Image (cartoon, rainbow, N blue to C red; front, top):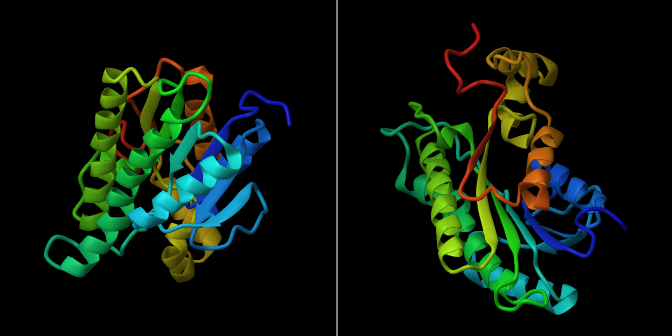
Length: 256
């Protein structure tokens, strides 16, 4: 398949649904060979599915060995997998819940960056200084505070600064590997299922969308387009950046 990513290999964690699935489809549409890494089976058949637990270092080692063994290279890693962990606040969050959220949302992204760098260094004709793009999905919760959910907010803040640290390290080492974070507002993904069950899907979307100055929620493809841009050479001078795609939500006072 031709396209601006033709010949490149991409891993998308949490790629079976939501932003991950949209990103996987767009990357594949531009010619990338996509590995959908998730614990739930991919439903749309985009790319090659590999069962993967982002919180497990052994799973990351196995995934990287699989990708390099079968594909021979690694160019793009989208660290998208994450959970909400509920809406408990600083008083009600349990240690167990805190640790579970951090293991997936924060430590899972750290491991994704670590093994992305290792894989990208082993790829291409310019070993070890090849090139690659790491895209970490954070949230507006990683930019502004809230009373809850405490664990989720902390984990997404960690992703923001981790991305900058990885970007600076790779630049310092002259690896030609870029790393950026993406910060969505409300996106119509399964993370909102509890609200949809309580309010109904369309009514819930209208309610959440009304809180955004742009007047609607994002669809997964809206964020997928941001991921595609960061993965491509069109963003070749962008690293260590936080790309906000929130319909204006963090620009000032929320729409009333």
